[in-house]
Structure formats: structure tokens, C-alpha cells
Amino acid sequence: MRNLMAFLVGGLFGAGLLISGMTDTRKVQGWLDIFGDWDPTLAFVMGGAIIPMAVAWQMTRTRRPVFGGDFPAPTDPTIDRKIAVGSILFGAGWGLSGLCPGPAVASLGFGGWGGLAFLAAMLIGMGLAPMAKSRLDAGGATG
Amino acid sequence: MNIDWLYGLIGGGLIGTAGALFLLFNGRIMGASGLVGGLIDGSGRHDWQERAALIAGLIAVPGLAALVMGGADTHLTDKVWVIVVGGLLVGVGTRIANGCTSGHGVCGISRLSVRGIVATLFYIGAGALTVVIFKHLLGVL
Image (tube, rainbow over all chains, first blue to last red; front, side, top):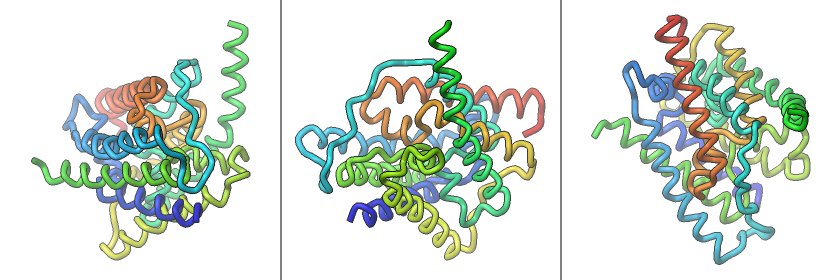
């Protein structure tokens, strides 16, 4: 049941990305292009997604996950170097390409060779991240 | 209201509903980079089936929808260096920061997570700056 629900969740997520236009790199880069022909669509997508999610977080206060286990732990308020450095690197790649991880996976079926190459590069980057992370941790300890 | 904004709102509602179901039923956060990245670095070995099932749905449904509609254009650049450098940065960055647009953005902001909000400000800021530099100043995008 967990896996069936996960499949449905992935399908709904993918349908949402396609309908909202977030698999179109022009719309995403249009959102980031504040000095050009700015496209506010991404703000509507974020707003539309945050509302049901906020309701769900409220519901987690009085119940437990339907399939058992526990809800994710409360968020850690610590702002470390990793969150800043990682998000800046991610933002730079997002601005260059117009793709973030969700749409990069969701467009695999229609993104052509370019989309496949992007996904491959992204997976390599994900494989390299633990090394970069431990270097950042070490750097944080010494200075 | 621009029709694209309406599609954005509807599509966003579906994304948020997906995240809400994953949280309430499976007790998990729907973050694309974490779900995929955990399969790459081995940290998600114990629940790989759940991750793989979600990713299968994420690929299959828009793929089939695009097939029915006669294709969907991603308008991705054909510059190989942009694709490769962009992909590497997105992969390494999201895993260092432990989240992307879905995890930190949608799932984090909706629970008023300070880390989610800070991460979102950083990646949108860096993305906007990158577009300014590479599109308007250097003219390569």
C-alpha cells in the first residue's frame, strides 16, 4: 500500500508540474528573469502547492501517518554553511538550465536527449555531494 | 488573470495535494532531490521501493500525458556546457543543502521552516543573479 500510494503521489506531482508549466524551462527562467520579461507563474504554483501542504501539516498535530510510523521530526532551526552554499550552487544551476530536480525527472519521457543528459549530470552531482558536504563540515570545524 | 497563472495555480494545487498525501499516508516529505539522491548515495537503501515507486509515477504520468497531447516542449537549451554544468550544480547543490524547490520550497515553507525559507531565498536569489549575468550581461543564455 505504501508503494502504491507513493506511485500515485509521484503521478500527481508529475501531472501538477506539467499542467503548471514548470517542466517548461522558459517559464522557470522567466520567473528568475527579474530584469527581463518577468513571468510570475512560479509564484502561483508555489502558492497553490503551499495551501494544501499547510493544511496537511496542521493535520499532523492530532494524528499519525495512515500507514504507520511517525511524522518527520520538527524542523531544525540551525542555519549552517551547507544550506547557504548548497542553495547558492543549486540556484546557479537552476538559473542556467531552468530545471530543478522534480521537473528534470518528470520530463524524462518528453525532454529528449538534452533532458536525459541533464538528468545524468544531476545524478553525478548528487553522487559527488557527500564528498563536498564532508569538506564543508571539516572547514566549519577549523574556521 | 493570465491563463498561465491559472494553470500554475491548478498545477500547484496538484503538487501540494501530492505532498499532503505523502505526508499524511506515508509520513514522508515529498522532496524530489532527497528521494532521488537517497538512491544515488545509498542513504535511502532501506526504503528504496517507496522511492522508486514515487519516481516511476513522476516519470510515467507526465510522460503519458505528453504522449497523448502530442508532445510537451521543455525548451531546454541545446548548449551542451549549460546542460552539463547546470545538471552538476543542481545535483550537488540540492544534496548539500538537503532540499530543493519541492522539499525546502513547498514542504518547508508550508510548515514555516526557517531552513526551508532561508534555502528558498538563497536559491531564488542565486538563480535570478545567474540569469542577470549569463543572459543580460554575457548574452550566452
